[in-house]
Length: 232
Image (cartoon, rainbow, N blue to C red):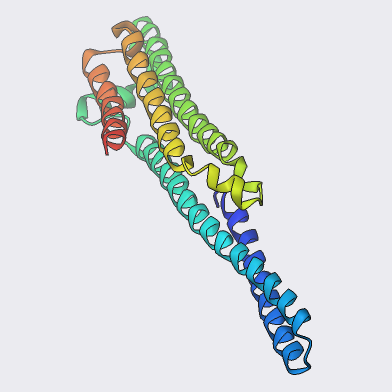
């Protein structure tokens, strides 16, 4: 549920209550006319007219809230899908890398037969594997934090919707454009961070050239997805 949904539900409750109040005023005005109390009937109809105007403003507010909620949900869903896709992709894509992994996890079995040379190579493999896993965990955690922060910032950006004054709400008619601009800036920032991360890593930190190419391809795919989304 997005932060906008409770606001929209609250407006719907107000809409129902004001609709009932307007109907009651209409019935009371009709009764006053039958009883010859025309002045009272006029006052009641004036009140009903004000309520009708308020109902129109509430309906417009609900439509905008629903639209904003849908947009925010779309952005959050997109980022979640990106995180899931990134996390579920296999660490390696060929048999050569898989052999390397088996050699790492079976190190305790081979130490006794391979001698001193084997004991020197396995710690290096384990250290390399640990570094790669830490890098990926850090990248996924950073992207998750970005998604959560974006939702909170977008929620704060629409705090003006709490104001029940219709005139003040109408003055903020550019809120939709502000939302689109905000989303664009967030995606641009994420795209820049991925690019900086790729440029900052060296071949020695990642491992072999083949492994480096596979990892960079994943990040490049995510970066391209963000870029295509921003261009739509």
